[in-house]
Amino acid sequence: MNSTKLSGNPVRLTSFSHGGGCGCKVAPGVLSEILRGVQNFPVPKELMVGIETADDAAVYRLNDEQALIATTDFFMPIVDDPYDFGRIAATNAISDVYAMGGTPIMALALVGMPLDKLPLEVIGKILEGGESVCAAAGIPIAGGHTIDSVEPIYGLVVMGLVHPDRVKTNADAQSGDVLILGKPLGVGVLSAALKKGALDAAGYDVMIASTTRLNTPGRRLAHLGGVHAMTDITGFGLLGHLLEVCRGAKLSAYLGMSQIPLLADVERLATVGYITGASARNWTAYGEDVALEAAISSMQRALLTDPQTSGGLLVACEPAAVDQVLEAFRAEGFAQAAVIGHLEAGPARVNVGV
Image (cartoon, rainbow, N blue to C red; front, top):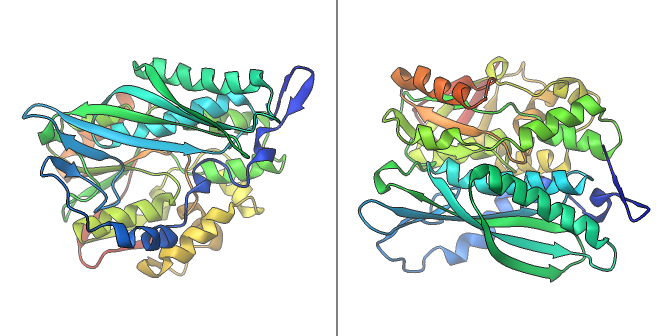
């Protein structure tokens, strides 16, 4: 489960990386500082979505019927099994296309490997894992780029298509919208337990099942008129990505902690201390824009900021569309999709009650 033996030697991919999965993301505050000086360049009128609202992907109008979605995502190992690492990284990268309401059409591989330390068999298994997910999504890996690097890095550039009228950004939510989360939280907690040898086989299976499930309902949701905004929950955690929705739409969010679905055994593991460093960094970056009821525990706060590698879709829809949205999730195997809160007029902040 935790390592792979190839060429007679055990290989622990996570031992090569200083952080795994979407927990590697640059902290939100630092990222804002980096991007501050590069947001004022002129853009063509065909660029429908750029970097202005921290959205999941760029969108470029090709014609009246088609817009091109372009995105990229890559990271260091979150698990030791190379095939699973490849699957997780590819699923995570493709998710951004679904989060914009699009259909992926092809991918390019991004590969950086310590060639003097990793057997070629291991690298091959990583690529096989990525290819298996792309096959499931119905897209080819049409090329890519490889480098010799200190830490193992794998991901994809992914392109997709969407009708220009069906693009779902993270900034178009409306007051009164209901918030629906497609996948349970807790991937960061499980990954922390895995790295410390405290995750059993059942927990590992839960983690892999979640992180390798493609967010395919995004394509269906783009056709629902009552769906106003979408994003996927990744390295900044639920609170961080929901704040991006609030800032884009200039609204306040209200969440019920008891309504938020969690992966099996996550609460217990978080309570005994299996929490990532990225969770604390996330809170430091945006905590001033979050109001927690006094009854919310430090463990629950950590779950709200827990970095989700290949996390679920977050959907803002009108109340009349809730049943349709949940049905779209259920039809594609997302049994734990749930209503977790709503949006109201007010300052861009998130309020969390029990």
